[in-house]
Image 1 (cartoon, rainbow, N blue to C red):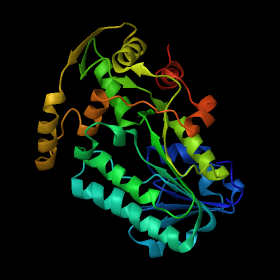
Image 2: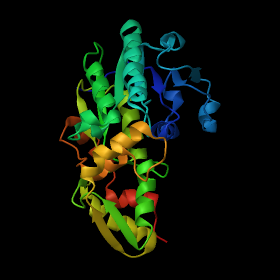
Image 3: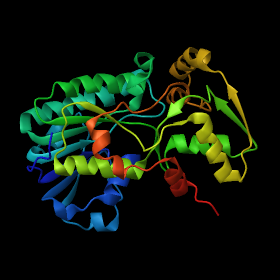
Image 4: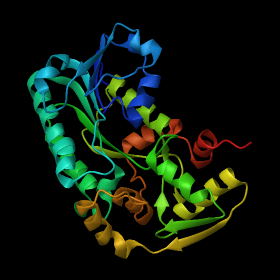
Length: 310
């Protein structure tokens, strides 16, 4: 589907999150009549954004559409970044990722939109996604979006890397020593995407009306095994390859799930992080990936941004 011309305003959920902050860094508010940010608490915005009269923060949550419905409409593109991630109960994932999305979609059906960009996750394709509460909640939310009677696209990012992304911090922790213990198989394939590249693509999709009416994976330029990636991280952090010890942990996933349900004690890896080491997270070919291929960095360029040499 070619670009549409009806986008005049943006409505963004989750602007305070990892991807949301990267998106705001790239946002030019003067391109729009209005930019609305739905937020539970007031955000500290970049100065050029905070002082721009076209940008408005709306205090509220997705389940209170009366707070934000007036910011929607037929010339507004919606960027839905908000999601429950990290450690949470299945009920919390359902409340925020499923029911929150449902409430937003109902408001959109009522008020209209130029298009809807739903940010999901490559994890919905993992073999045991139905037993992984975060992935399952995003899968169910995708089903709700599929029924939307307005233009839409679902974007499934692969492993998202940035200085503040939890999975990058975990890689730094694993690779920082002489011996790196790698949970799962070193042959698991990943296709990491830099958070800045993802943010730029999402902003372009919403701004230019690239609504494919389908779910599309989005990843960086390179596919690499997780063992080879860890080796490159080790060399950048320590100047040497080090020793990597793979530990089979797939059998322990049910135990980890059970433990996370009943305990608040922190574990070295969450179920989501462990799943990243166990299951391939790579892109299936699709028009969106092809459209933005020249904007997506490969592994070396991503690592140079995150851990520059010298």
